[in-house]
Image: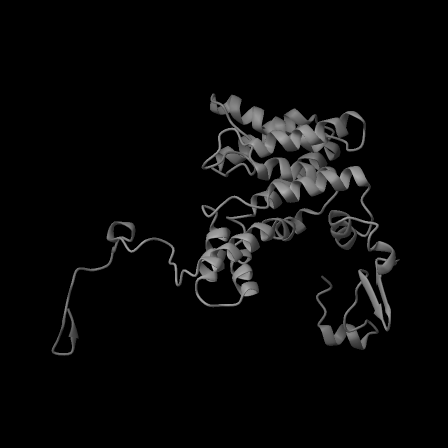
Length: 282
């Protein structure tokens, strides 16, 4: 960011809004220099998303791989807070789009942010290896030791439910032939797997990669910016949120809370019962 105010920038000759993404005129819609009528019917949803974010049309093989990541993250049932929130919102009488937005608004650093953290770590690891002319295994070992010393969680590793996530296997199955034929470099998939392997050795127990880890690696492989990861995941998980909110609306159930009305599920931890006497708190 330039640090200048919007008015200062405008007075210095910038447009009020500057954008390299779209040019909209009467009877004309252009995206990154392409006419919209040329894009419609000729590029896929993931290609359009990549074009909007990065400025280029992703080749078809990479687009299919990117689409697979979007499909893999689409739904994880009402255990996921974003899905549960969308369903709860749907029972409260708000509009469908508001119910979907409620679910999406729960996606952040803790729920939905591991892919961004993973991508940043993968990019940093590769850059450090290149700049310091050190092999990847050494860089990964040093960074992992530092994370463990500070008790930081390695993004993309472990899952509350799965110890052998089928989504991870499938995405690797799709990515590995592309590495072999040179369609993607494969370095970030290698780095992610090396982090998992070294952590397993240090912990002396099996360690599994989760969907966020493989999604981070694949998105790095195709050159997506880490800062866009939560937005991309919102588009992916938004499909599931929309489906669950719609399903819940069809049930006719009203005002469903986060848990049943059972005392043991909500524990009161405040002061014991007390009264107001003579205007004083007791």
